[in-house]
Length: 494
Image 1 (cartoon, helix red, strand yellow):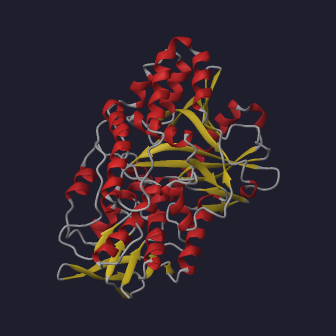
Image 2: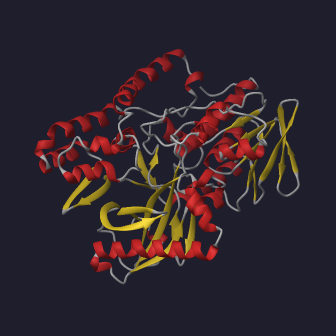
């Protein structure tokens, strides 16, 4: 029985571990934190449970390959799913727009709002429908499929390719200019970081409107713990609070991992299910270069997303309020840049996330790797860092109360997380919670997970397929094990 050491107990590491056990390997996951999940996590503050990850999850529609994968790893199956009827509500100058899952309803309401925008509205809905049936491969990699399946997949990908060629180089801000109504312009541009390609919006709406993007009850931490239970049921072992310090290499082959507790774990294969930059610079000591990653990490065009997350406890039942909302606000400053919008997610559907009679709201403010130096410098003075977190929380709280006067005096800042929080918690590159963003200046570059000149080592996780996220983490974790099976001549389930 071959031995696989997996570095990182996030979704990619857990998926790799589960599939390693299912294919007859002996595996151990080393996780630097005291709990598994990586960035798919949550934490408790002042009687509230703060969800740190899932806004919505791709792969919740039964009959899809990704749903079957989530079910196999224990993430879905025996868990209730919150089925959403809309993707968010945008308010602008007295006009409210709701992004309904029902595209016919969405098109009808947008055309009623702005008849003069009928043509670009119909074009947007057509583009969303164009890629609705595109399904993320999750059973086996495309390269391992029968030739007939490959042709079917390429046929489906044709529509995605047409859309990428047409809209891939158009930013959400530029795309919004097609519309005359200011509220529609706001809805198109407000929710995405500056420079983000409109393709991200279209693909997200396509996934959501096809019924394949909903929320597992219990949130992110509960999902990760279900996967851990599944892994351990299969005989896998998780070692928490022990970080990998170095991958030991002999004659060009990964043979062991040196750990922070002084131990050395021998391995037939090493799978690094963690931050790509950390793997290359720290675990491999910079001895192995990778052109694809080196280029992207060095380029100013390749942006990694992070955020500030502010959790609010509200002493009120907010079940009648939007689940997701965004609106313009009085300007405020974050990391030296002016912000003029407030958005929030309303967790009224998770009563256990708040004390009785209360509701949890979470506001997210976009940041990137270029904002990280500000936070890194500020963190050198912990007192000033904490003051700034408190200021930001209060600034946004004031604007929530201005927008919803009936909530004045009922909102409490519970917790503020910054890019530093994400970096400290998971070691993520400059606090990134996904890999490289889809912008108008970049190409989506997939990575095989192999490092040139290094045998029996695989990198896995969301860094392999931009823009990353939980589905990429889960699928690459599985596919890495299938590649090892191929190397070991172990028959896989096709």
